Every structure is written in structure tokens, then in C-alpha cells.
Amino acid sequence: MSRSKISVPEAKQAMERFKMEAASEVGVTLNQGYNGDITARQAGSVGGQMVKKMVEAYENSIK
Image 1: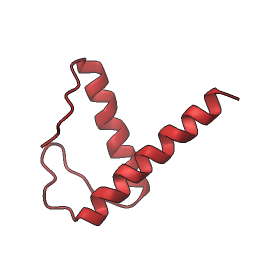
Image 2: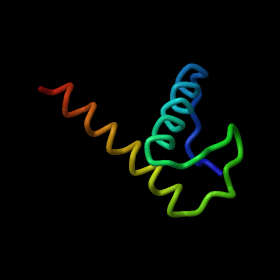
Image 3: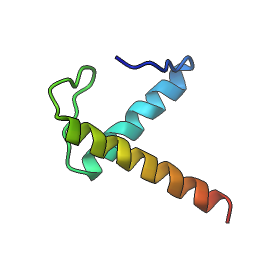
């Protein structure tokens, strides 16, 4: 269960799209809603890809 709550509906939708995009880039299939059937390794690779993309976006914004 997610501990952080996104209170802005548009932000929540954007984060879902971002998560799905990151998952497809690392070859993990996610469903809308519950994804408790994926492995910890798969979940970690999705999260890692999301962080990588956020760091890249930040680095590009400060150049």
C-alpha cells in the first residue's frame, strides 16, 4: 500500500502514466490498479527507471 498520497487528480494521472512508461521501458507489464503479482525485482526496476528519468530531467533543466 502506498504511503504517500497524491492529492491533485491530474498529478496522480501523470504519475500513473509515468510509471507505466517506465515499466514498459524495462520490460515489465503492469496492470491498472493492483500489481501485487510482480516480483520485488520487477518493482525495483520500475522504480529505479523512474528515478533515473527524474534525475535526467533535473540535470537537463539545470543546464
